[in-house]
Length: 381
Image (cartoon, rainbow, N blue to C red; front, top):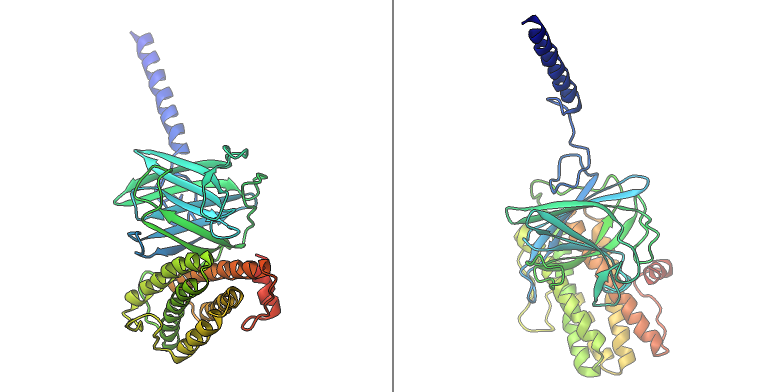
């Protein structure tokens, strides 16, 4: 049956050609596809331009956990991955005005093998944060995906740098932007963050530093800086709680709560590098004499009136901004940059809050530690 045999041979050749043509479209051995972005929940080598680790301390009901952020940009889009040590949701908020207010939030979790990601906006200092669509905006997450494995949740997403939505922040390549972030142990996006929450700065430049694989030793200056910042944050908390007792302004109670998180963030660095804690027994006692003198003087002045108390708060936060900027400039260690950057964002917010409260009472303030230009820059963020 030569006809049948010929048909079989022709069919076989066609199948071979189809198979070979399919092989051309597939990855070939040794081909580097690591730099291709794909929202699959797997962060591949060279898939992103920069990364940083954000440290969430164990503090006041938070179990603690770190969030690693990866990113890259092109002319139109931001590509980002969030990798958090949790089986619940993770979230990042861009450029809040004050506390959480005005934050452009991306929040995601895994529902089994399906990623759930929302484009949200925080309407006030402590929320609520709702989806942009509920507020009258648009969902501007173009692509997303993720996975949960070995106690980590990874969410990847893509959005335009400028979405045109009033509930989104316009981003630019190379921009340094303040962020807030949080994690929970539940994948229900309506549940409260109970694993970690903190603040930070994100540099969207392509040359952002990546976390080192090994812990490098501290210089003497870096060690002294960590101990100084630790006591400075503790002093701020102690002072605000005492001023709250004197003048009963809620702002002192609220900021004192943030200072607790700042203190615990610095403690992460101390534990990591094996530094002895300078904290003294009892509130209002400090190893650093300059910090001790400042606490004593500001407590005495601040107790005189609500305006004097607010001015004391401004002095502490202005000094904190100055000192954190100095510490950041004097180290090249990514973990110190990450922690100090988060503290700096918080101190700048606190400074703006105290100045606003002063102005509401008709009082003025002239900067003591920052230049007029530096001070105005913080006020106009």
